[in-house]
Image (tube, rainbow, N blue to C red):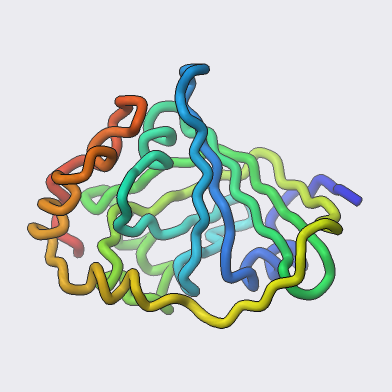
Length: 194
């Protein structure tokens, strides 16, 4: 059954790094605001930075709710499920921030993702999460599913964009520069991808 962990290390780290998909959950402080739950994938877009810190690449999409919520209050939960092998669910509850392209930490953080070509996906930010609570649970009711591979559609769609056209694309979307609840989202125009 469930167990609390002091760090992201050993078998727990191996489990997290092996999963092809994980989920993020965030919410605004306003009780009437919308809770956001997002699936994340693409092999190579997630990294364990140290025993208490993880990060993932925030690619182009049709909204920026996670970024907006993190900018407002920093609260985030990440969750991984075992769809193959022994049942397991891992959650990291923590504080996160969106590190944007013009941040002095950008170049160092991008270095944690050597196995993915960040120029293909309209990279907007790197989400860095510092764990406060790390726990796992049984996952007995999670079904078995197979991983057949990453979809190539995201890269095909956004590889044809440069910084200017990507900023123009985002400017046309209702929920990139601000969230559905009116919180600040991704700052536009995007700084150049260095």
